[in-house]
Image (cartoon, rainbow, N blue to C red; front, side, top):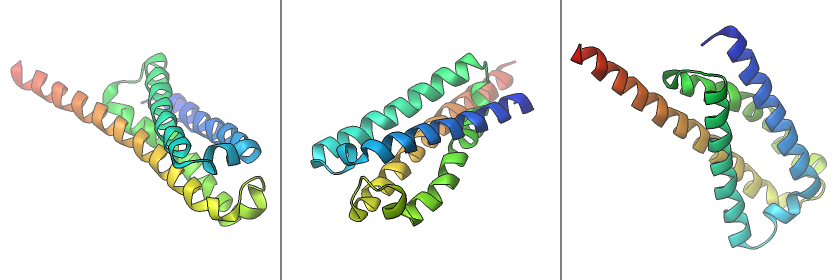
Length: 138
């Protein structure tokens, strides 16, 4: 993967994190303080969107599937790091949500990043396996 791709993915990860954090700062109570069905629907749909956007981005940037795990880490890491102060000062920074919602919010984040990285691991492993199999066949 080229340095330009790495930097682009890090910046993209930061932009996605910032946009998501702003949305949840303004309207998080609608996503996290409703019913359990609403919460889990948000969790599942967001994880699917993470993977779909990631898939499209990696295809658009023409990054080899064997490098997708690395790409997922570059995208996820800025958000994971930036969420530390958000969760540490949740009641001050996410004022539209109850302090007790921090656990749901943190679990949501953990699941989203885990879904993205797991998806990329699956694709990278599959690509690596088929690449190794192709080499042995020749």
